Amino acid sequence: MITLTDVQQIEECVYEIPRSYRDDMRVPARLIADEAILEAASHDRGLEQLVNTACMPGITKYALAMPDIHQGYGPPIGGVLAMDEETGVISPGATGYDINCGVRLLASDLSFGSVKPRIEALVDALFAGVPSGVGRGGELHFEGDRLNMLLERGAQYAVELGYGLPDDLAHTEERGCLAGARADAVSQAAKKRGSGQCGTLGSGNHFIEIGRVAEIFDEATARVFGLFKGQLVVWIHSGSRGLGHQVCTDYVRGFQQPMREYGITVPDRELVCAPFTSPEGQGYFSAMACAANYAWANRQVMAHLARKVFLDVLGEDAHLRQVYDVTHNIVKRETYEVDGQPRKLIIHRKGATRCFPAGHADVPEAYREVGHPASYVLVGLPAALEKTFGSSCHGAGRVMSRSAAIKQVQGKELQQRLRKQGVYVHGGSWEGLAEEAPEAYKDIDRVVQAMECAGVAKRVAKMVPVGVIKG
Amino acid sequence: MSFFERVEHTADLAVVVRGGDLPVLFANAARALFQMMTESPAARDRTREIALESVDLESLLVDWLNELIYLHEVEGETYADFRVNALSPTTLTATVTGGATTRKLKTIKAATYHDLTITETEAGAEAHIVFDV
Image (cartoon, rainbow over all chains, first blue to last red; front, side, top):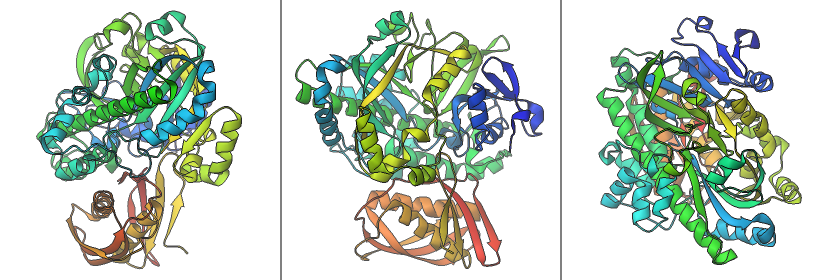
């Protein structure tokens, strides 16, 4: 177990476990954190998992974790791994099973105050209008060529079919379609799992949340994002559903033998990998891009369904404009300066979001003078490119296991407690709700302050929930 | 002592499963999986034959559980009886019986290799498995 004495402070809110900590480390392991977050991180095995990722072939500069770090499987949740494109590996296990799990933020023109009495009706209508819950399918079915189009073109295809607006794509990471997707790299088993789940929320930590903007930290940037204090907004958190799970399962399985043949060893078999340039590596990248595109289409369809519910319940003025859609489980090809030279890198983000600063070519044109929003809403700062491969935290991060949460929290009591605090929750199961209780997570304010303190991202606006749908 | 128990894991679902020998261990791992995912099926009218080949025993356990997760999701079936007919370090054949899923409790995305161990014990065999949820 890694202790705090193994960790050195590099600068304010940046800590490092040096390469000398373990013989098999190829680079140091870094963590963005304050003292309290660092101390909390030492209580589970997240730091050990971070050190494991520092041993992977081709890892560049350092293995990195955001302040929402906690124990996962393979890499820690909150992990960012940059592999050299020529000499490095790609790892399905390090990307995770819910490929392109991500968050979409939609903003209304309405103030919370003007619709407060209708919030419960809105939540109930969203629960009825957007399929959610364990294993629940949707009304849409994609098979054959239509499914292949969805996998290769993502949210762009969903918009062509009438789900959403072209402007949504301009406000989506990669415009909702990751290049390199090839549907023939996706197994029939994965396609079968995905055929009936596009436009469904799922369960676990996925949610649709109605929130109000509680605080604006940066008026000028908030204005560019179209955010104002008291505004009613909607968050959609979901991913690639069974299709993405099966893509990961297929490639974790399929990589076991080739990894031996390539002579690669990793400290944790879930970090199984293959050279990025190998046929296996390219196959996974193509399939992973398909799953990512499926997830963008999934959130696109759910945004369309949420818009319909808003119009039905609140009337014709209840439009929802897309602020941004950002992923937190993905592999991307990106270029960063390393040792003064531009390097093409394979960036694995596992529970971390992209956060590019002002002026970056991949930031939507409307936001180019400020940078693109990340979770909470943050905006990327120039130092993100130098320090974190353009990455930020993706949420608060768990501190309590699911079983501990179930022991300490009763789902029904939690629903009543939240209702008294002004948050109406409509959940699929009491146990599922208890597992996701607020006390099972870190203090989000501390987490985002650590990002700001490290100079990586700054706060633009804080939202608080007023209504939540849990699957 | 129960045939399985949950152990602490911050984000996901970790279990220790026990069995009198390896085939029973594999069957018990499947029973544990379905106890966590679903309620028992009302009927026992669906039977499936499963044959798997993997690179080693640990992979075989992961592949076995992931095959059952796949069948559960796409066929809408829940299995309650698991008979491992033959098991070598790289191959498995099994017969599983159950019925249409009546009520799902939890989505389990996959069995993972993280912290995966299969060990021989005085009482037989024991496995530590982490599931992504």
